[in-house]
Image 1 (spheres, helix red, strand yellow):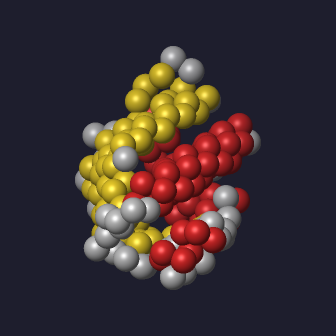
Image 2: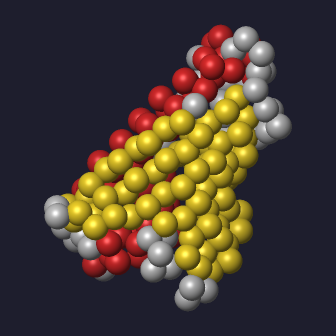
Length: 167
């Protein structure tokens, strides 16, 4: 299932947003604000690029019907982001802690100049290969992804409005 999520952040440039997006203090605060447990697993970063892996655990249960199929009440996943500084685009992929061979999610993201600030566009594909219920699980994951990005966008705009991105 293909998806596209877009948000515009006012009062910040693309260069400032690039810096903010990869700022660990910001990411820790963001995850706390949107109820995501987050553990940095590995990060290779230099002046040109970043390759970051984090373990993420949403603090919410999956619906009972999906719990029966997954045999778990929560889904955690490892997120890997690869990004070349100055390109304003990167790739992401996630690997869940359960049924990793049956749940494939990956895509890309871009930071775009916008007359009102900067736009963040996240695209991707979520493919759940579970006979009979794969589409239901994909829909649940997609709704959760969109809600998480909406919540993150609200927090990010509040951070920028408070001038914390310049600190």
